[in-house]
Length: 91
View 1 (cartoon, helix red, strand yellow):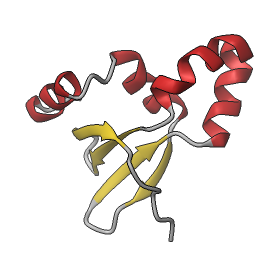
View 2 (tube, rainbow, N blue to C red):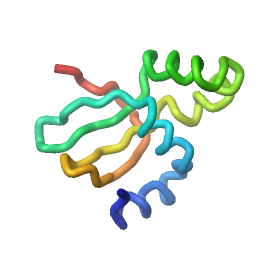
View 3 (cartoon, rainbow, N blue to C red):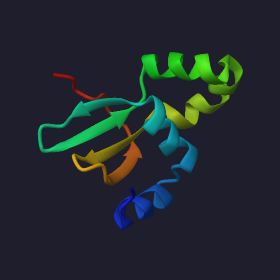
View 4 (spheres, rainbow, N blue to C red):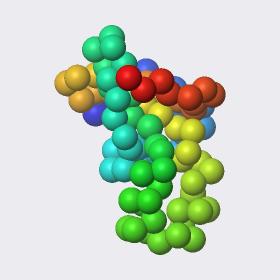
């Protein structure tokens, strides 16, 4: 479920709906320590997508998907979406 803020941010930042769907399906989750979950794409996500969609399709889409992330509350609402500019720190 999207919040009004997340919908506005995805439009403002040029994040396509297919990127958010790919995050839902293939994204890796990590708790941020503040009560939310960060969902992002990594190598494991890419491999899973290649198994389902094929190498060529993923190669064309990967540039759009690689740096996209979303922040989700614990009750499942998307708080915001954006582009990563630095590495996500893992615990």
